[in-house]
Image 1: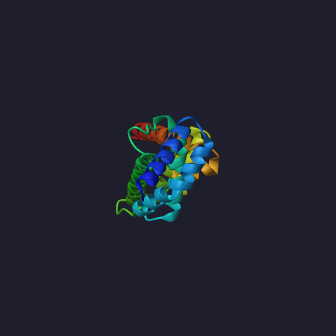
Image 2 (image 1 turned 60 degrees about the vertical axis):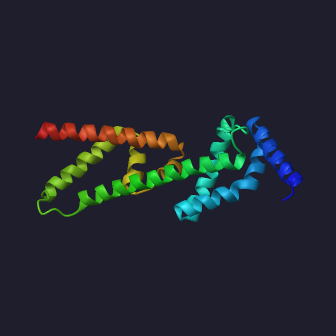
Image 3 (image 1 turned 135 degrees about the horizontal axis):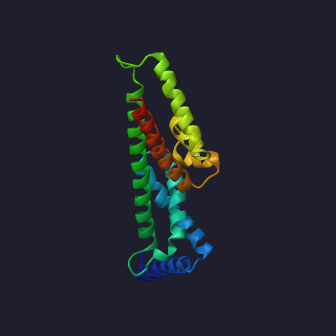
Length: 192
């Protein structure tokens, strides 16, 4: 590439950056057209799954739009900025997978037959107690927990199923599990 062509390409990238920071949707579309392949490739390499990589690619560009005020062309290029956002989104997904694996492992350990398993009446009582505790949570918190734990849906899938924002679903699940734990501890302490 000649020096003039290289300078022209840098000017185009700087122009996209300036327009993006200013809130130009056309600049976002241009950034998508130019660098979504880069973002997707990085995501596929890290995640090993095209579906997850597509989701991450979309999340990166949504985050880029929402955080466009953080783009500083004097500190780096638009593609470099997008790569940084991609790394964060991929790390978030890896952390989510690790949490889900730990939760599934813990649930599997709890559901393994125990030589000292309680009699069927006690297991039924425990299930009824849990069902009552879930009902006390109210909606949509109880549904979010059921979908996440019983149906083993991801937070994103729960959000889609319930038609709620992802952050709201995560909050409902986290707070709901905390409330359930407290309630079940209280009941266990009362009957001990």
